[in-house]
Length: 612
Image 1 (cartoon, rainbow, N blue to C red):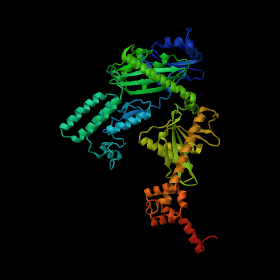
Image 2: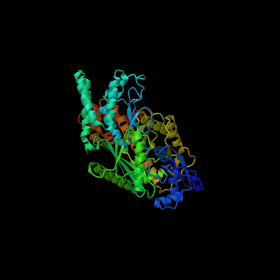
Image 3: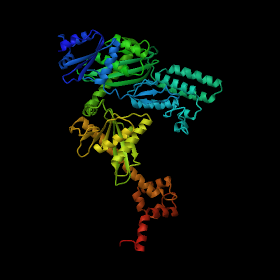
Image 4: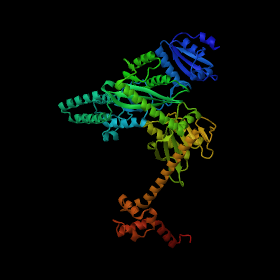
């Protein structure tokens, strides 16, 4: 059957999909001559262990003809991302990496992180594998270049008054209507030059701009440009200079061992190292190193926002001619693929290889600890489109029928990202209505993230079953967000998923279940701590804040002197007077206020209102 089908395959460029008995795609490839390439899978020639394992599983194949080998390469990338075949090299969590977006299509462009690249006239920089480092850089950038962050449709849809960013000089305030669009555009061009790595050219331009502003007696503008120039110079001084000969280039390498692999990109601009981006890769068993490097090269530049004029490699890639043509078309200019054998560029490649080896060791250590395997197992268990690299867990806490609070914890790659934890005071839901509280906190959390262009999770975990999941789902629908939601019920320890009527059965020792339990327990711990903290704070406020003459300083002195509120309650007026700054009259007032309930009870008893 396959032989007859093979005869109908043309000797033209294209992509092919190998399938197993169940019809699942297990391998995707591309070829300059489809029939010759496919015949190699079904002939009698010798292959390696990986090739033999693949051949034994093939039950059928499909193919798609293209006009050129470059088109076949592009199609191959799309098919690999769509099907994620077992025997292909793939980015394990390619949905994770953010970009920086500059909305050049707007009269007053904005700058913010995003995970979606669209053909909308915006300019994108990235992807960045370290989202935290990217956000830190973005905060620094907005101090140097005060661009707007609001979502107003300027210049038409202007607010009544500028926001706080304008007041603290983090935005020029184009919403006021008096900012020169050309000056704002010039600032955006400088920012893009900074992100592109053209910092030497940028500093020359800023020096000329500062001098021109001074000659025109525009001293305020000259001072602003001077501050930008000084900030950029400080950043440039911290960057390591490798070689002016390196110019603008990327160094692309990969390191692999057994079923683990890591791809790494060093971005060199003007001879200086701008960033190191590491990508965990999913590879099949016995995947040749040359295929790992070649496929990573294609996958990286398939999603990268830009291509440099030179790419340094440790070895020649397979399909070099097709890859060169594809990269040339993406860049709109010449792209040189170089394998340096000596000199400073060879040193750059060796440095990248050492870094890739270190990242691989870290990945293997994480897998050995069970953290990495928990993320992968959870993705398989819940049948998610990609790995749940970022998971957010919610818990609602109400103690003694008093005010309700909630907390969200964040796990990245199976480990807590404590700096991203957040606490909430429930505003609208009544105490005891956990469903309404969950809907409120999920809605507030992701509305805020959307407004601030923050990072959305790949998975949401709630403490509870179908009711809690439904509450979270209502909040997400109101925001038009599609994020998978699961619940972990305490008593049954069952896993429920949005859209499924029955619980998912998970073994007690499963890495997926252990990870879910860690996140659920951490969310509960943080919410409980927040609730207790608020109760203690409320107790102090109700007992001391309402006393005339007792401010925050005297309240602090009282608690410091007596050690606790309980000791203060037990103290006599004379003891309270011993606190420095507390006179006889104020001490009596404090004592009377703290014991007002007891006094009210005595008076009621004397009036005959008591029970005894």
